[in-house]
Amino acid sequence: MQSLQALGAKVGARLKERKETIAVAESSAGGLINAALVAVPGASAYYLGGEIIYTAAARERVLGITRDEMAGLRSASEPYARLVARRVREQLGATWGLCETGASGPTGNRYGDAPGHACLAVSGPVELVTTLETGSGDREANMARFARAALELLLTAMR
Image (cartoon, rainbow, N blue to C red):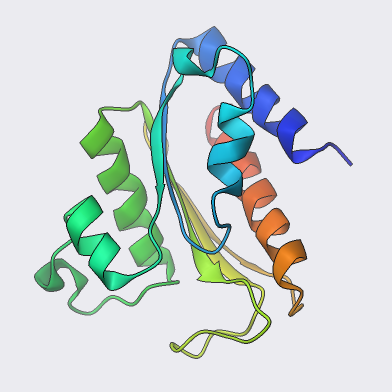
């Protein structure tokens, strides 16, 4: 299996080739998506920035997503992931926005999702949203799987 850094390099090469940019907002992956993209020499050609949105306060203050915008939404859901991917793309003026939100474990989240649940979204010329269920409470393994799945979703969108 390809390492997370190698996958980040593959994404970076595709972005460079297409002269496109990326902005990332992640949660349960804890920065692994951002790290995979930034670990590549020359990442400044495509990486505009990223953030770990772990709380409602961060969501509101960093992304500017208001309580009104959250009405009827819950974190760790596909509609929320889509909103965050769109918002981070707009805020940083990127071609692509990428979001991961979920429950890495060892327990589920307060919304009733089991550990290993993540929603991933890409916003840009193509929009894709998906849900991943690993069925595992292994926090570290889930974080890596979430990051990998997010980067793979971005590659799919860029085809």
